[in-house]
Length: 95
Image (tube, rainbow, N blue to C red; front, side, top):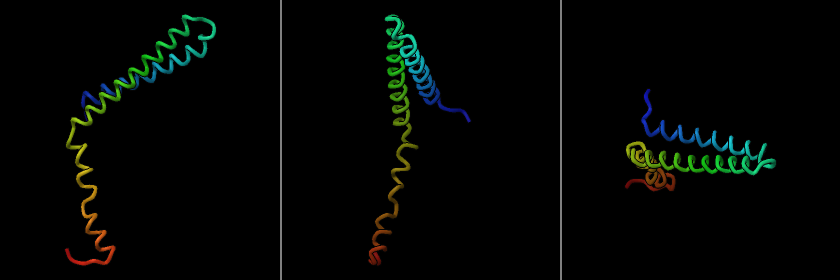
Protein backbone atom coordinates (compact mmCIF):
# COMPACT_ATOMS: atom_id res chain seq x y z
CA UNK A 1 0.00 0.00 0.00
CA UNK A 2 1.41 3.37 -1.02
CA UNK A 3 1.54 6.12 1.54
CA UNK A 4 0.59 9.70 0.88
CA UNK A 5 3.42 12.15 0.12
CA UNK A 6 2.70 14.23 3.24
CA UNK A 7 3.14 11.13 5.43
CA UNK A 8 6.50 10.38 3.85
CA UNK A 9 7.57 14.02 4.18
CA UNK A 10 6.62 14.24 7.85
CA UNK A 11 8.27 10.93 8.62
CA UNK A 12 11.51 11.89 6.88
CA UNK A 13 11.55 15.24 8.69
CA UNK A 14 11.13 13.54 12.05
CA UNK A 15 13.81 10.97 11.20
CA UNK A 16 16.20 13.79 10.22
CA UNK A 17 15.35 15.62 13.45
CA UNK A 18 16.25 12.58 15.50
CA UNK A 19 19.55 12.13 13.66
CA UNK A 20 20.47 15.82 13.99
CA UNK A 21 19.62 15.90 17.68
CA UNK A 22 21.63 12.75 18.41
CA UNK A 23 24.61 14.02 16.44
CA UNK A 24 24.44 17.40 18.18
CA UNK A 25 24.15 15.88 21.64
CA UNK A 26 27.01 13.47 20.99
CA UNK A 27 29.22 16.20 19.56
CA UNK A 28 28.50 18.59 22.40
CA UNK A 29 29.03 15.92 25.05
CA UNK A 30 32.19 14.40 23.59
CA UNK A 31 34.04 17.42 22.20
CA UNK A 32 32.15 20.42 23.55
CA UNK A 33 34.29 20.80 26.64
CA UNK A 34 37.52 20.80 24.65
CA UNK A 35 36.67 23.12 21.81
CA UNK A 36 34.43 26.13 21.44
CA UNK A 37 33.96 25.33 17.75
CA UNK A 38 32.81 21.79 18.53
CA UNK A 39 30.39 23.11 21.14
CA UNK A 40 29.02 25.61 18.62
CA UNK A 41 28.58 22.95 15.94
CA UNK A 42 26.93 20.60 18.46
CA UNK A 43 24.56 23.34 19.57
CA UNK A 44 23.76 24.19 15.96
CA UNK A 45 22.94 20.56 15.22
CA UNK A 46 20.68 20.43 18.28
CA UNK A 47 18.93 23.60 17.15
CA UNK A 48 18.49 22.22 13.63
CA UNK A 49 17.07 19.00 15.08
CA UNK A 50 14.52 20.92 17.13
CA UNK A 51 13.51 23.03 14.14
CA UNK A 52 13.17 19.94 11.98
CA UNK A 53 11.03 18.21 14.61
CA UNK A 54 8.73 21.20 14.95
CA UNK A 55 8.29 21.52 11.21
CA UNK A 56 7.69 17.78 10.85
CA UNK A 57 5.00 17.87 13.53
CA UNK A 58 3.38 20.87 11.83
CA UNK A 59 3.38 19.10 8.45
CA UNK A 60 1.84 15.98 9.99
CA UNK A 61 -0.80 18.04 11.82
CA UNK A 62 -1.79 19.97 8.73
CA UNK A 63 -2.02 16.77 6.73
CA UNK A 64 -4.21 15.16 9.39
CA UNK A 65 -6.45 18.22 9.59
CA UNK A 66 -6.88 18.22 5.83
CA UNK A 67 -8.06 14.60 5.79
CA UNK A 68 -11.48 15.15 7.37
CA UNK A 69 -12.82 11.72 6.48
CA UNK A 70 -10.48 9.99 8.91
CA UNK A 71 -10.20 12.85 11.39
CA UNK A 72 -13.92 13.43 11.98
CA UNK A 73 -15.44 9.97 11.54
CA UNK A 74 -14.34 8.47 14.88
CA UNK A 75 -15.61 11.50 16.77
CA UNK A 76 -18.97 11.52 15.03
CA UNK A 77 -19.76 7.93 16.01
CA UNK A 78 -18.13 7.82 19.45
CA UNK A 79 -21.27 8.75 21.37
CA UNK A 80 -23.77 6.91 19.18
CA UNK A 81 -26.39 5.39 21.44
CA UNK A 82 -24.81 6.67 24.66
CA UNK A 83 -27.96 8.51 25.76
CA UNK A 84 -30.12 5.45 25.16
CA UNK A 85 -27.76 3.21 27.14
CA UNK A 86 -27.70 5.68 30.01
CA UNK A 87 -31.50 5.89 30.06
CA UNK A 88 -31.80 2.10 30.15
CA UNK A 89 -29.23 1.89 32.93
CA UNK A 90 -31.31 4.31 35.04
CA UNK A 91 -34.39 2.18 34.49
CA UNK A 92 -36.33 4.53 32.24
CA UNK A 93 -38.04 2.89 29.30
CA UNK A 94 -39.32 4.38 26.08
CA UNK A 95 -38.20 7.60 24.49
